Length: 288
Ligand SMILES: [Mg+2]
Image (cartoon, rainbow, N blue to C red; front, top):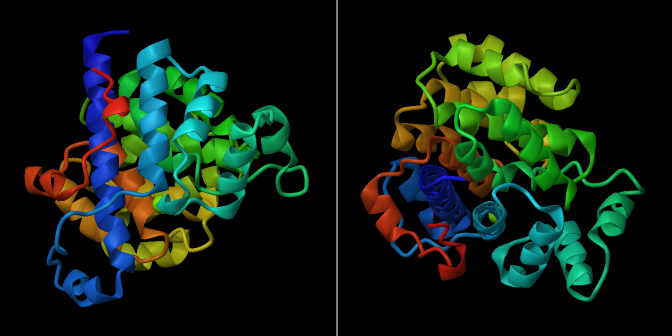
């Protein structure tokens, strides 16, 4: 565990928070027209559950040097703010953990015993990849551990692995879009998420994010497999340009705070004025 890893995880968290906070402004009706012309809405931009949970991920990385599942569940539950837009399943799970429930039982029992396949594990995971920059296998391992705490379904785990590996690569060395997604694919287990990322790889020849989201999904189903492939297509194509990546992601609609949080966490370098307009991160999350 190094100071550099802490700094990278902190940068990823800030990128994630800006994407989440600005993306969530999309849902304010008065801001819709402004978004169409790429005008920024009035500050401050408040972040949502994506950032609150990612802050716990960073706290646990900094304290434990990796993902300790019990510590992560405890931090999720302790910091759970009902008003941050949590999905009903995760909100209920965290309330029951806070009341003494066992996350291992509660997370598995959800959704008829399958566990959630929602995008809630992928939305918070990018800092794990940044922590493990250049070591995608380690990123994949900690991403899977982090997902299991609330989203143990194999597709939700695969979504978290895919995003964390992408973040580990983005925080390492420049790669062209094709090899970038090929390396992600090498670490993602078979299933709908992996099929979607493979399709994203094939669609790198396209340039219209709305057309691509029409094929891959935009998070409208709030499922890992309809959220993660499109975000990785954007991250692969616009790895060095946070603002362009943000507008490409937001233009597709859907679960905009989460898709923009994922892309923002991978790219990890928001424009300074955007960071200044975003609600400050909680002090307890500071990894340095
Ligand atoms: Mg959210």
